[in-house]
Image (cartoon, rainbow, N blue to C red; front, side):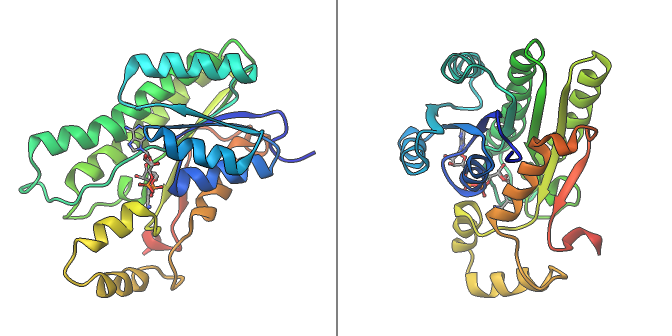
Length: 253
Ligand code: NAD
């Protein structure tokens, strides 16, 4: 038996970065995956690379109606939904003084509204079908702050505690649905390299970043994918409302 045999997973923002690594890892462990992304072409490309165990869906996580449609389609295509990774997210570099209200709302819409809408749609699909596991991708920046990421900190802190509320609701409702958050530190995906590229000296930023990680290295997408495999598997049947930190020691200091 592989660790995720018989699991059917939807990964939002699954077309690239941490989401794509998670899709690959899930399929390696026996799951079938719905790669749901605002960039349908990229999701289709990844599904083509993975093969018959993957299918691509267009999903903007801020669109309430789209969640209902996509989840219903995944259930129809695969015969159910056991696992949901609310991974789609956007970064934004601005202090509280520099952040416009428009930017604030855009970050909160994707990173927090998207996780709420996804979690609610996931619960509705799972509760009458034997339960499941919902994994919300927060960040170390949902636990500690940075002066440069006001909206991002707010969104990821929101995901952290919203996850506990939803986990408690499911537990106390008698649903076999576990909901946990994952908190990665900096990983060199498009999100981070894109932000670093706007700085005056990206190489100095990278060097300083590595120095802030006690293990002396950055995490990689596969590290987060492994954490998601663990939380998706029945090995964690008694873990709900937890925060799983994947950070090379970043917030232990
Ligand atoms: P990425 O930019 O490499 O990939 C994000 C994916 O989400 C893309 O495929 C993009 O098309 C998709 N997406 C963006 N907006 C969307 C929307 N509205 N609806 C659906 N899909 C959408 O980012 P990543 O680094 O892989 O980040 C994935 C998650 O991990 C995010 O929630 C991010 O905040 C979190 N995270 C990343 C890091 C890091 O250092 N990379 C650290 C901690 C947490």
